[in-house]
Length: 116
Image 1 (tube, helix red, strand yellow):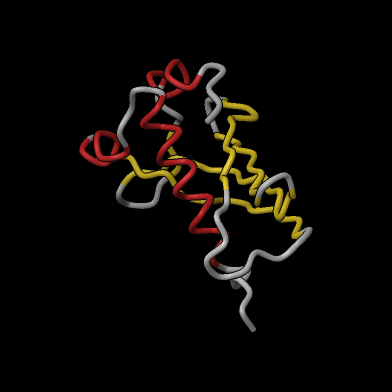
Image 2 (cartoon, one colour; image 1 turned 90 degrees about the vertical axis):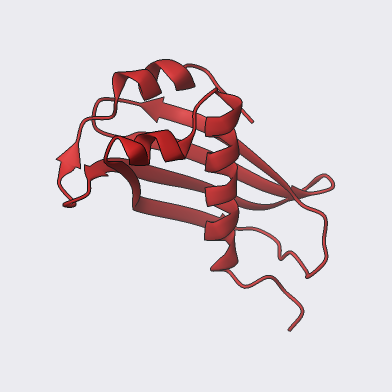
């Protein structure tokens, strides 16, 4: 069909999250080394206009909220000045056994008011 499949946007969101964490001075690998994993608990997507293969897109990622129990990111994916997708993704932190954990204070402090 020539369009980016809807499932691919979830990968774009993950790229945005990873780069936001990096821009905030963190590394996901450090959390994994501590035995903490960040998992997606909820995704809401609003597909407004399709992206086509080979389009140059921009992924805007921001922290909507961080609490002891969850991290909420908001995304806008654009091509030029056209908004293609908006999304809200809620993340939780678990240990290697899959047990829910508190969001580390260091991560809460790191994110502050970060946008990418």
